[in-house]
Image (cartoon, rainbow, N blue to C red; front, side, top):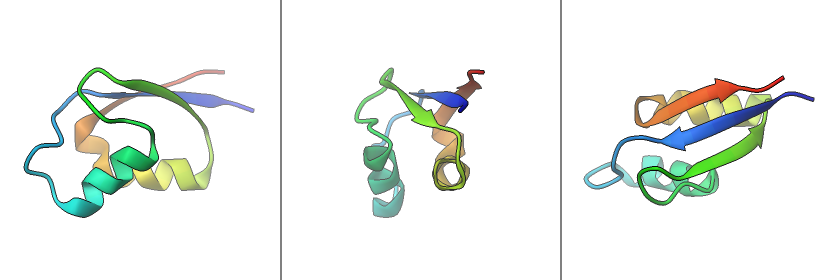
Length: 60
């Protein structure tokens, strides 16, 4: 199964609580944090909601 590398590139300061919670659910706490998540519908939904804060690359 494919995975996605997700990196937080913008600050969570001043963001709405839902967006902060979504970043936390992805395992991202501060700028520069990276995580590897499975490429599935749940992960893609999280990325869609806070995509403006993230850099996403796909692994094969």
